[in-house]
Length: 275
Image (tube, rainbow, N blue to C red):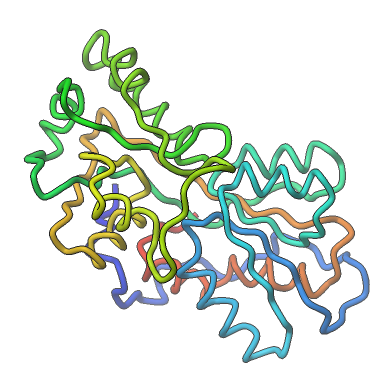
């Protein structure tokens, strides 16, 4: 597993990346400078905002970003909202759109992993993390499965825990607090991100989330701790990108740009791994 903390906001050598590839053929509706509507996983907010801003300045193409839990965004698209590009924190939700026939086959564009974000009162390291989470008094926060891939990855982690200690899945499944990722989940105050706010408010003792989220929360609230998963509990997250078949060539071009070196450098600076 890559060391996410050491790569956050760090310089990245161009040689780490493959030559630009053509993942999305330019077969969309005629190109224009009309707005490209991009729906993206909430964990992508930092890098996607920077990438879209730079792309817009360079090309003149207006990009509008909508962030949220990937499952909820997919439902909004299925109900008729006019997204052109969908960047999900998993492969399942974009594949479901593709299976419907109106969206292109998904392409993995970045990777992430799960970490534990803990209170300063919690003493845990990778080798002791599972035993700490299993303590009766320990409150374990997660996102909401099905609505948010982070929740699905948490339950995949619970399944791995069962292979380490019998009964771990049942215990973790029963105690997990689904604090975010649902349509009715509480929102943080303006200017704050969910994870640093929730942990700062003491809503959980341990929060299972993406390493990128955990590190960003620790930057905002330094007393929080980030604990990486031991090898036996590691769960990788593949983020996939798809484009509406009816989208303009401008949308296709932006989706392609997310796969190319300049955007990948930015993703990497925010702690995301290469495809």
